[in-house]
Length: 613
Ligand code: F6R
Image 1 (cartoon, rainbow, N blue to C red):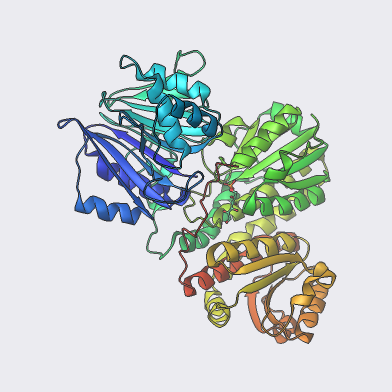
Image 2 (tube, rainbow, N blue to C red):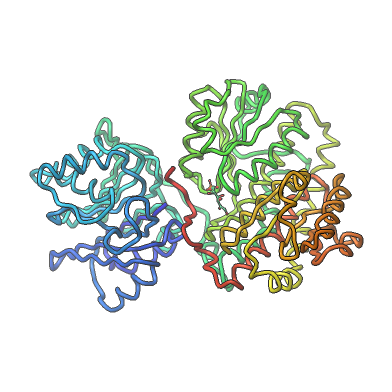
């Protein structure tokens, strides 16, 4: 949460910082600000505004600035309400040091008391102001690095910093502990940001900072040091293959819609990447040693949050059915505190789009303390979880900017189904023929996904009739139960309507009491062993005059007849139907949100990357 940027070079820093923040706004958007040091006039320029980046941009148009070094921030409030006063950057009470910060300083109250006793004054409600005053309190003889290191050694928690020293307008200082920071390399200029999309307009060559490393950036050099030893570290740069077009809307009104429509391509690319002509499933960087370890796995945990947790629920079903390995999906924030019974014979799979989710990262570290093998399914290249896991499979869905996850989810699903088949091969639970048959079904998914996307007219029609309702139920069975949870999450996060997903068999155990003529129920009932049971659920809802919005296989006349709305999806293999059935639910959530005039890509109170507990 929160996005931070920094620039030093030969160009005007202001538009560069603003452009970077535009690409980080998904991380938080309750206020934004920049600070620049004007070399010629030797003065500090700070502009902050409450609200979205557009507010800050408006102010910057009225008060243009020119500087060749600066830092910027887009905020998701943790300590201190969203306000101009609490917006970053923050300065110490003598305005010597300027800081932007992502994360939480856990011992900020104690430190604040200590600093107050020494005469420091505070104006905001943020923990960042404590950090910047602490750095200032150690600042002597223009030795910023020493002050920075001393302060960091006392700041508990997880955070990333970009800082300026007013007396040294030729240097940017950055530090990372658990929260992400990427350095972008240019010619006669260097950049830093919380995430690579903010760097892509300027450079594709990046260096990932590791935890407890700080870096000193001038326009011509980037030097990385270990916090513990103070020694310089050599780090090779990485070339990012994502391009700018992928990080733009490309004619769509919202990133979310663009990302929904990218799903056939994401599925096709996953298929091309992971399988070869001989129907062999291969993952990048797999080694015989890793395969050997995987062969010995007795139990699998899939640990993740939100949408990624829903992918984990489905992934566990596949892992059990295909590879015969007992599998459990757990929510990361629970897993990390549950004292889970995990052994060295277990595989803990961390599923995460961003690769930075604080609870999932903590779960990964917890799993490691038990000696378990850790495998990350991650979208963002070079992210912390990707780097810390024993083995990482990238989902390669491209940048996902919309806060509501769509293409990253289907990419996670298809990766997990491939992983279950890979495990089935090495565990010998499925024959080569069976696996080849399964791959034939997966091969059909991109086309089926394109076809499902063609139903947008029927979905918009249904959304137009139902968008004012305040409560929605979603029900499904088997692989489509997690889809019900995911459909409900999508709707609530971007439309703010209450939505709840249930296993359809649970209806009679409580939720059926909610059914009346005003209650829409989205019934996910594609062709499957349990389709008839779903039809009984539909009848029960109808008998109580509920509004049935059915997702069914395209030729299912019977279901169509008993539903208030029928959204057809193409027939695919039952166990893969989750990957297709979610498409109309994403579109439904999107159109309900648009009709309610919600901010689809940046829904209130949310941020894309949850880097605090
Ligand atoms: C919902 C959504 C969130 C994320 C969750 C985990 O649309 O995007 O629920 O799935 O915050 O994030 P990652 O996958 O980055 O760990």
